[in-house]
Amino acid sequence: MINLEQSQYLEPQSKQVTQDLHRQLLALRNYKALELINQSNEKYDVPWLSDTLKSLTNLDTRGRDIILNHPAVYLWIENAKTVLEKHSEKQGEWRFKGFIYLCINIWLKFNMVPEIPPFSCLINNELVNNLNLYNKNKLNIDFSGLSAVNISIKEDTLFITNDTFYKSWKSRELANTLDCYPFLCNQTLWTSSYLDIITPSELRMDKMELVEEISEDISILFTEALELVETCWPEMHTEIKENVKHIIFFKPPGLPFFSDFRVHGVIFASHLKRPLINVAEWLIHEASHIRLNTLMCARPHLIDDMKAIYPSPWRDELRPLYGIYHGCFVHSRLLRFYRFLIKDTSPFKTIVLKEIDRITGELEKGLLIITENANLTSEGMSLVKEMKQNLTS
Image 1 (spheres, rainbow, N blue to C red):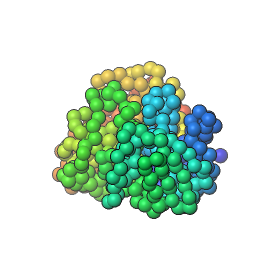
Image 2: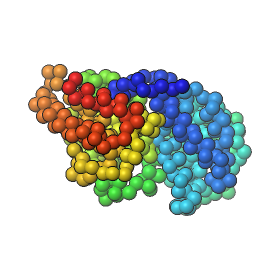
Image 3: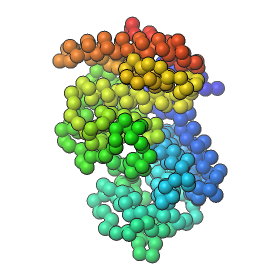
Image 4: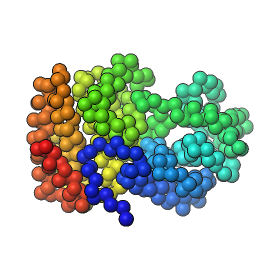
Protein backbone atom coordinates (compact mmCIF):
# COMPACT_ATOMS: atom_id res chain seq x y z
CA MET A 1 0.00 0.00 0.00
CA ILE A 2 1.36 3.41 -0.98
CA ASN A 3 0.86 5.95 1.79
CA LEU A 4 1.47 9.56 0.81
CA GLU A 5 -0.62 11.24 3.50
CA GLN A 6 2.35 12.01 5.75
CA SER A 7 4.17 13.96 3.04
CA GLN A 8 5.12 17.56 3.71
CA TYR A 9 3.91 18.93 0.40
CA LEU A 10 5.24 22.47 0.84
CA GLU A 11 8.78 21.22 1.39
CA PRO A 12 10.95 21.29 -1.75
CA GLN A 13 11.33 17.89 -3.36
CA SER A 14 15.05 17.28 -3.08
CA LYS A 15 14.91 13.50 -2.58
CA GLN A 16 16.04 10.99 -5.16
CA VAL A 17 13.30 9.67 -7.41
CA THR A 18 13.55 6.25 -5.71
CA GLN A 19 12.07 7.96 -2.64
CA ASP A 20 9.64 10.22 -4.51
CA LEU A 21 6.43 8.23 -4.79
CA HIS A 22 4.66 11.03 -6.63
CA ARG A 23 7.09 10.97 -9.53
CA GLN A 24 6.90 7.19 -9.58
CA LEU A 25 3.11 7.36 -9.86
CA LEU A 26 3.39 10.02 -12.55
CA ALA A 27 5.66 7.72 -14.58
CA LEU A 28 3.11 4.93 -14.12
CA ARG A 29 0.35 7.22 -15.40
CA ASN A 30 2.33 7.91 -18.57
CA TYR A 31 3.15 4.22 -19.00
CA LYS A 32 -0.58 3.44 -18.86
CA ALA A 33 -1.23 6.12 -21.48
CA LEU A 34 1.34 4.48 -23.78
CA GLU A 35 -0.31 1.12 -23.17
CA LEU A 36 -3.62 2.53 -24.42
CA ILE A 37 -1.92 3.79 -27.57
CA ASN A 38 -0.30 0.39 -28.05
CA GLN A 39 -3.63 -1.39 -27.64
CA SER A 40 -4.86 0.66 -30.60
CA ASN A 41 -1.68 0.07 -32.58
CA GLU A 42 -3.61 -0.74 -35.74
CA LYS A 43 -5.01 2.77 -35.56
CA TYR A 44 -1.80 4.57 -34.59
CA ASP A 45 0.70 2.42 -36.55
CA VAL A 46 3.68 2.63 -34.18
CA PRO A 47 5.34 -0.80 -34.56
CA TRP A 48 8.18 0.04 -32.19
CA LEU A 49 5.94 0.76 -29.18
CA SER A 50 5.41 -2.84 -28.02
CA ASP A 51 9.16 -3.38 -27.73
CA THR A 52 9.52 -0.03 -25.97
CA LEU A 53 6.96 -0.97 -23.33
CA LYS A 54 8.82 -4.23 -22.67
CA SER A 55 12.05 -2.28 -22.25
CA LEU A 56 10.40 0.14 -19.82
CA THR A 57 9.38 -2.74 -17.56
CA ASN A 58 13.05 -3.73 -17.37
CA LEU A 59 14.17 -0.27 -16.21
CA ASP A 60 14.42 0.68 -12.55
CA THR A 61 12.54 3.58 -10.95
CA ARG A 62 15.16 6.11 -11.98
CA GLY A 63 15.18 4.88 -15.58
CA ARG A 64 11.40 5.10 -15.94
CA ASP A 65 11.50 8.62 -14.50
CA ILE A 66 14.16 9.69 -17.02
CA ILE A 67 12.26 8.32 -20.01
CA LEU A 68 8.60 8.78 -19.08
CA ASN A 69 8.61 12.00 -17.05
CA HIS A 70 10.03 14.03 -19.89
CA PRO A 71 8.39 17.02 -21.61
CA ALA A 72 8.75 15.42 -25.05
CA VAL A 73 6.82 12.33 -23.92
CA TYR A 74 4.02 14.38 -22.33
CA LEU A 75 3.61 16.28 -25.58
CA TRP A 76 3.74 13.10 -27.67
CA ILE A 77 0.97 11.52 -25.59
CA GLU A 78 -1.09 14.72 -25.77
CA ASN A 79 -0.78 14.86 -29.55
CA ALA A 80 -1.86 11.22 -29.86
CA LYS A 81 -5.39 12.40 -29.07
CA THR A 82 -5.65 14.48 -32.25
CA VAL A 83 -2.96 13.28 -34.64
CA LEU A 84 -5.34 11.15 -36.71
CA GLU A 85 -8.18 13.67 -36.70
CA LYS A 86 -6.24 16.87 -37.39
CA HIS A 87 -3.03 17.92 -39.11
CA SER A 88 -2.80 14.77 -41.21
CA GLU A 89 0.52 15.95 -42.63
CA LYS A 90 1.95 15.70 -39.09
CA GLN A 91 1.19 12.00 -38.59
CA GLY A 92 4.53 10.75 -39.89
CA GLU A 93 6.41 13.35 -37.89
CA TRP A 94 4.47 12.32 -34.76
CA ARG A 95 5.33 8.65 -35.27
CA PHE A 96 9.00 9.37 -35.91
CA LYS A 97 9.37 11.72 -32.94
CA GLY A 98 7.81 9.16 -30.61
CA PHE A 99 10.30 6.61 -31.92
CA ILE A 100 13.16 9.00 -31.06
CA TYR A 101 11.79 10.13 -27.67
CA LEU A 102 11.04 6.63 -26.41
CA CYS A 103 12.62 3.78 -28.33
CA ILE A 104 15.90 5.50 -29.23
CA ASN A 105 16.29 7.20 -25.85
CA ILE A 106 16.01 3.89 -24.01
CA TRP A 107 18.60 2.44 -26.36
CA LEU A 108 21.04 5.31 -25.91
CA LYS A 109 20.67 5.93 -22.20
CA PHE A 110 20.40 2.32 -21.02
CA ASN A 111 22.05 0.32 -23.82
CA MET A 112 18.87 -1.61 -24.66
CA VAL A 113 19.01 -2.10 -28.42
CA PRO A 114 15.40 -2.20 -29.70
CA GLU A 115 14.29 -5.35 -31.47
CA ILE A 116 11.83 -3.98 -34.01
CA PRO A 117 11.01 -4.80 -37.61
CA PRO A 118 11.94 -2.18 -40.25
CA PHE A 119 9.15 0.33 -40.80
CA SER A 120 8.31 3.37 -42.93
CA CYS A 121 6.91 6.78 -42.12
CA LEU A 122 6.78 10.34 -43.46
CA ILE A 123 9.19 12.90 -42.07
CA ASN A 124 10.31 16.31 -43.25
CA ASN A 125 13.63 18.01 -43.72
CA GLU A 126 13.24 20.25 -40.67
CA LEU A 127 12.84 17.26 -38.40
CA VAL A 128 15.93 15.49 -39.73
CA ASN A 129 18.01 18.64 -39.41
CA ASN A 130 16.76 19.17 -35.86
CA LEU A 131 18.36 15.89 -34.87
CA ASN A 132 21.67 17.47 -35.79
CA LEU A 133 20.88 20.90 -34.37
CA TYR A 134 23.99 21.22 -32.25
CA ASN A 135 26.21 18.73 -34.03
CA LYS A 136 29.36 20.11 -35.60
CA ASN A 137 28.81 18.02 -38.72
CA LYS A 138 25.35 19.09 -39.85
CA LEU A 139 23.41 17.36 -42.58
CA ASN A 140 23.56 19.17 -45.89
CA ILE A 141 20.60 17.46 -47.50
CA ASP A 142 17.66 19.22 -49.08
CA PHE A 143 14.29 17.49 -48.92
CA SER A 144 11.53 19.02 -51.00
CA GLY A 145 8.43 18.69 -48.87
CA LEU A 146 7.61 15.44 -47.13
CA SER A 147 9.49 12.26 -47.93
CA ALA A 148 8.74 8.62 -47.20
CA VAL A 149 11.63 7.01 -45.35
CA ASN A 150 12.49 3.50 -44.23
CA ILE A 151 13.83 3.00 -40.72
CA SER A 152 15.81 0.03 -39.47
CA ILE A 153 18.23 -0.81 -36.69
CA LYS A 154 21.18 -3.16 -36.98
CA GLU A 155 23.39 -3.71 -33.96
CA ASP A 156 24.31 -0.19 -32.76
CA THR A 157 23.32 1.76 -35.88
CA LEU A 158 20.10 3.50 -36.90
CA PHE A 159 19.49 3.61 -40.67
CA ILE A 160 17.13 6.08 -42.33
CA THR A 161 16.85 5.70 -46.11
CA ASN A 162 14.77 6.51 -49.17
CA ASP A 163 15.45 6.69 -52.90
CA THR A 164 17.58 9.84 -52.67
CA PHE A 165 18.75 9.91 -49.07
CA TYR A 166 20.75 7.66 -46.79
CA LYS A 167 21.84 8.46 -43.27
CA SER A 168 23.13 6.23 -40.50
CA TRP A 169 23.76 7.24 -36.91
CA LYS A 170 25.92 5.24 -34.59
CA SER A 171 24.37 5.12 -31.13
CA ARG A 172 27.13 7.32 -29.67
CA GLU A 173 26.50 9.98 -32.38
CA LEU A 174 22.79 9.97 -31.59
CA ALA A 175 23.51 10.25 -27.88
CA ASN A 176 25.55 13.40 -28.49
CA THR A 177 22.65 14.84 -30.47
CA LEU A 178 19.78 14.02 -28.14
CA ASP A 179 21.55 15.11 -24.96
CA CYS A 180 22.83 18.39 -26.35
CA TYR A 181 20.07 20.74 -25.21
CA PRO A 182 21.23 22.91 -22.27
CA PHE A 183 19.19 23.94 -19.23
CA LEU A 184 18.76 27.46 -20.65
CA CYS A 185 17.79 27.06 -24.30
CA ASN A 186 15.59 28.50 -27.05
CA GLN A 187 14.48 25.34 -28.83
CA THR A 188 14.31 21.56 -28.51
CA LEU A 189 13.28 18.75 -30.81
CA TRP A 190 9.68 19.02 -29.61
CA THR A 191 9.35 22.84 -29.59
CA SER A 192 7.68 23.18 -32.99
CA SER A 193 5.05 20.61 -32.01
CA TYR A 194 4.24 22.62 -28.91
CA LEU A 195 3.92 25.86 -30.86
CA ASP A 196 1.44 24.08 -33.14
CA ILE A 197 -1.02 23.34 -30.34
CA ILE A 198 -0.79 26.31 -27.98
CA THR A 199 -3.43 28.99 -28.58
CA PRO A 200 -3.46 32.77 -28.01
CA SER A 201 -6.14 32.37 -25.34
CA GLU A 202 -3.93 29.98 -23.40
CA LEU A 203 -0.97 32.32 -23.74
CA ARG A 204 -2.99 35.44 -22.99
CA MET A 205 -1.00 37.01 -25.84
CA ASP A 206 -1.31 37.00 -29.61
CA LYS A 207 1.45 34.54 -30.40
CA MET A 208 4.65 33.05 -29.13
CA GLU A 209 7.94 33.32 -31.02
CA LEU A 210 11.18 31.80 -29.84
CA VAL A 211 14.28 33.96 -29.72
CA GLU A 212 16.94 33.17 -32.29
CA GLU A 213 19.71 33.26 -29.70
CA ILE A 214 19.82 33.77 -25.93
CA SER A 215 21.79 36.90 -25.16
CA GLU A 216 24.73 36.77 -22.77
CA ASP A 217 23.18 39.25 -20.33
CA ILE A 218 19.97 37.19 -20.07
CA SER A 219 21.98 34.02 -19.55
CA ILE A 220 23.99 35.70 -16.79
CA LEU A 221 20.83 37.13 -15.19
CA PHE A 222 19.13 33.72 -14.94
CA THR A 223 22.31 32.06 -13.73
CA GLU A 224 22.63 34.66 -10.96
CA ALA A 225 18.94 34.22 -10.04
CA LEU A 226 19.46 30.48 -9.62
CA GLU A 227 22.54 31.20 -7.52
CA LEU A 228 20.47 33.54 -5.32
CA VAL A 229 17.91 30.76 -4.76
CA GLU A 230 20.72 28.31 -3.98
CA THR A 231 22.25 30.70 -1.44
CA CYS A 232 19.11 31.44 0.56
CA TRP A 233 17.08 28.24 -0.03
CA PRO A 234 19.31 25.37 -1.24
CA GLU A 235 16.53 22.77 -1.04
CA MET A 236 14.42 24.77 -3.51
CA HIS A 237 17.39 25.11 -5.83
CA THR A 238 17.75 21.31 -5.78
CA GLU A 239 14.07 20.90 -6.63
CA ILE A 240 14.42 23.24 -9.59
CA LYS A 241 17.42 21.34 -10.91
CA GLU A 242 15.71 17.95 -10.45
CA ASN A 243 12.21 18.83 -11.65
CA VAL A 244 12.80 21.47 -14.34
CA LYS A 245 14.20 20.06 -17.58
CA HIS A 246 14.59 23.31 -19.56
CA ILE A 247 14.01 27.05 -19.37
CA ILE A 248 13.03 28.10 -22.90
CA PHE A 249 13.04 31.74 -24.00
CA PHE A 250 10.56 33.51 -26.26
CA LYS A 251 10.34 37.04 -27.62
CA PRO A 252 8.53 39.76 -25.65
CA PRO A 253 5.96 41.15 -25.19
CA GLY A 254 3.80 38.65 -23.36
CA LEU A 255 3.72 36.73 -20.13
CA PRO A 256 6.95 37.03 -18.15
CA PHE A 257 6.95 33.29 -17.36
CA PHE A 258 4.60 30.34 -17.72
CA SER A 259 4.52 26.55 -17.59
CA ASP A 260 2.22 23.96 -19.16
CA PHE A 261 1.57 20.36 -18.12
CA ARG A 262 1.56 19.26 -21.77
CA VAL A 263 5.31 19.85 -21.64
CA HIS A 264 5.68 19.06 -17.96
CA GLY A 265 9.03 20.11 -16.52
CA VAL A 266 9.59 23.18 -18.71
CA ILE A 267 9.53 26.87 -17.78
CA PHE A 268 8.94 29.36 -20.61
CA ALA A 269 10.44 32.81 -20.01
CA SER A 270 10.23 36.08 -21.90
CA HIS A 271 13.65 37.14 -23.20
CA LEU A 272 13.58 40.40 -21.28
CA LYS A 273 15.79 41.91 -18.57
CA ARG A 274 14.16 42.42 -15.18
CA PRO A 275 15.37 42.82 -11.58
CA LEU A 276 17.27 39.84 -10.22
CA ILE A 277 14.87 39.26 -7.34
CA ASN A 278 11.91 39.10 -9.76
CA VAL A 279 13.62 36.41 -11.84
CA ALA A 280 14.35 34.36 -8.70
CA GLU A 281 10.72 34.75 -7.57
CA TRP A 282 9.29 33.67 -10.92
CA LEU A 283 11.60 30.68 -11.17
CA ILE A 284 10.33 29.47 -7.78
CA HIS A 285 6.78 30.36 -8.86
CA GLU A 286 6.83 28.22 -12.02
CA ALA A 287 8.87 25.41 -10.47
CA SER A 288 6.18 25.24 -7.75
CA HIS A 289 3.43 24.92 -10.37
CA ILE A 290 5.42 22.06 -11.90
CA ARG A 291 5.81 20.33 -8.54
CA LEU A 292 2.12 20.71 -7.62
CA ASN A 293 1.13 19.33 -11.02
CA THR A 294 3.18 16.25 -10.18
CA LEU A 295 1.52 15.91 -6.78
CA MET A 296 -2.01 16.42 -8.11
CA CYS A 297 -1.57 14.13 -11.09
CA ALA A 298 -0.30 11.32 -8.88
CA ARG A 299 -3.02 11.81 -6.27
CA PRO A 300 -6.03 14.19 -6.66
CA HIS A 301 -6.32 17.07 -4.18
CA LEU A 302 -9.61 18.61 -5.33
CA ILE A 303 -12.92 17.20 -6.56
CA ASP A 304 -15.04 19.12 -9.11
CA ASP A 305 -12.40 21.85 -9.09
CA MET A 306 -13.07 23.30 -12.56
CA LYS A 307 -16.83 23.87 -12.46
CA ALA A 308 -17.45 26.92 -10.27
CA ILE A 309 -15.38 30.09 -10.56
CA TYR A 310 -14.51 32.59 -7.84
CA PRO A 311 -12.82 35.99 -7.46
CA SER A 312 -9.08 35.55 -7.58
CA PRO A 313 -6.98 37.31 -4.92
CA TRP A 314 -4.15 37.87 -7.43
CA ARG A 315 -5.97 38.35 -10.76
CA ASP A 316 -8.76 40.58 -12.02
CA GLU A 317 -10.69 37.72 -13.65
CA LEU A 318 -12.69 34.93 -12.01
CA ARG A 319 -10.82 31.65 -11.55
CA PRO A 320 -11.79 28.01 -10.90
CA LEU A 321 -10.79 26.50 -7.56
CA TYR A 322 -8.01 24.60 -9.31
CA GLY A 323 -6.30 27.88 -10.23
CA ILE A 324 -6.81 29.42 -6.79
CA TYR A 325 -5.45 26.26 -5.13
CA HIS A 326 -2.35 26.41 -7.36
CA GLY A 327 -1.96 30.09 -6.52
CA CYS A 328 -2.11 29.38 -2.79
CA PHE A 329 0.62 26.75 -3.13
CA VAL A 330 2.84 29.13 -5.08
CA HIS A 331 2.21 32.00 -2.66
CA SER A 332 3.03 29.78 0.33
CA ARG A 333 6.39 28.89 -1.15
CA LEU A 334 7.17 32.47 -2.16
CA LEU A 335 6.40 33.53 1.40
CA ARG A 336 9.07 31.09 2.58
CA PHE A 337 11.51 32.37 -0.04
CA TYR A 338 11.16 35.98 1.10
CA ARG A 339 11.43 34.98 4.76
CA PHE A 340 14.70 33.21 4.00
CA LEU A 341 15.87 36.23 2.01
CA ILE A 342 15.13 38.75 4.75
CA LYS A 343 17.31 36.81 7.18
CA ASP A 344 20.26 37.73 5.03
CA THR A 345 21.74 41.20 5.19
CA SER A 346 20.94 41.81 1.56
CA PRO A 347 20.05 44.89 -0.49
CA PHE A 348 16.53 43.47 -1.00
CA LYS A 349 15.22 44.23 2.50
CA THR A 350 12.76 47.00 1.59
CA ILE A 351 11.16 45.14 -1.33
CA VAL A 352 11.13 41.88 0.64
CA LEU A 353 9.09 43.41 3.48
CA LYS A 354 6.55 44.75 0.98
CA GLU A 355 6.33 41.39 -0.80
CA ILE A 356 5.79 39.52 2.47
CA ASP A 357 2.85 41.81 3.31
CA ARG A 358 1.34 41.46 -0.18
CA ILE A 359 1.75 37.70 -0.40
CA THR A 360 0.42 37.13 3.12
CA GLY A 361 -2.75 39.13 2.43
CA GLU A 362 -3.43 37.42 -0.91
CA LEU A 363 -2.73 33.97 0.55
CA GLU A 364 -5.15 34.53 3.42
CA LYS A 365 -7.91 35.42 0.92
CA GLY A 366 -7.11 32.45 -1.31
CA LEU A 367 -7.11 29.96 1.54
CA LEU A 368 -10.46 31.33 2.76
CA ILE A 369 -11.98 30.69 -0.69
CA ILE A 370 -10.56 27.15 -0.74
CA THR A 371 -11.66 26.38 2.83
CA GLU A 372 -15.23 27.62 2.27
CA ASN A 373 -15.83 26.17 -1.19
CA ALA A 374 -13.48 23.33 -2.13
CA ASN A 375 -14.25 19.63 -1.90
CA LEU A 376 -10.84 18.41 -0.74
CA THR A 377 -9.36 14.93 -0.69
CA SER A 378 -7.16 13.87 2.25
CA GLU A 379 -4.12 15.12 0.32
CA GLY A 380 -5.82 18.47 -0.26
CA MET A 381 -6.73 18.78 3.42
CA SER A 382 -3.14 18.00 4.39
CA LEU A 383 -1.73 20.67 2.08
CA VAL A 384 -4.27 23.32 3.12
CA LYS A 385 -3.33 22.64 6.75
CA GLU A 386 0.34 23.15 5.88
CA MET A 387 -0.39 26.37 4.03
CA LYS A 388 -2.37 27.79 6.95
CA GLN A 389 0.43 26.93 9.36
CA ASN A 390 2.90 28.56 7.00
CA LEU A 391 1.08 31.89 7.31
CA THR A 392 2.25 32.31 10.91
CA SER A 393 5.42 30.20 11.08
